[in-house]
Amino acid sequence: MTALSILWTAKSSNVKTGPIPVTTTSKTTCAPGCPFQGNGCYAESGPMAYLWQGVTDAGPNAEFKSGKATIRTTDWQGLCGNVAKLPEGQLWRHNQAGDLPHTGGMISDTLVEQLVNANEGKRGFTYTHHNVTQSEHNRGVVEYANRCGFTINVSGNNLTHADALADLGIAPVVTVLPVTVEGKADIRTPKGRKVVVCPATYKDDVSCASCGLCAVRDRKVIVGFPAHGARKAKASQVAA
Image 1 (cartoon, one colour):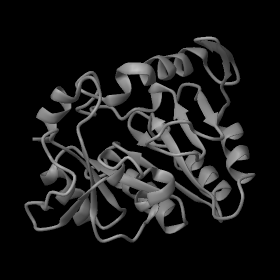
Image 2 (cartoon, helix red, strand yellow; image 1 turned 30 degrees about the vertical axis):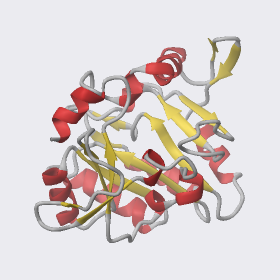
Image 3 (cartoon, helix red, strand yellow; image 1 turned 180 degrees about the vertical axis):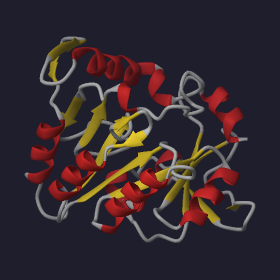
Image 4 (cartoon, one colour; image 1 turned 90 degrees about the horizontal axis):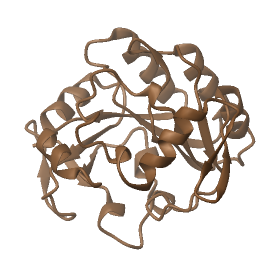
């Protein structure tokens, strides 16, 4: 596993997340085989792309320039220390870009356990595109984290994939949707599961901070995200 570089933002200025703590983790954490890599990933374009590349290139516990700002990264231990210091019940989002640490597609159970322990009493949540349908190891890590209070949403490429993930019963599910999907659309998976479009994608007065749906581990609905970003057309093709 290569060294993990993480940017800890104590109060996000992103209108979609709202003013909560968020992280950005180096590209090395991305899941091997993710169909959106180089093919519509929202974090690979726009201002996020420059920030993400800067975090990746800088390495852990280093500084880099982003515009006029000097930004300092941390490592996994620094991340866990920051999380542990959060107040009780604090909502926070891990990985506005990036995924869970892994070696060859196998999620690190040791590092995830450290983060789970740091998150005790907090409301941390994230998403993973790592393979859980074919990897018993990854299923176990994801299920453990959710059982112990850190929400890891498993990410579907489309509605059929979302059904396969939901069938596992190990974690809440999210999925990418075609760009043409409207916010209030009545969407069902092929197996009839209800999909709720992320309200922050179509309501100006909603953010992660005010919604918190993705942090709910035992929810009955799948959360859908219409393809977005400068390369949304490519992501939409995958989702369709």
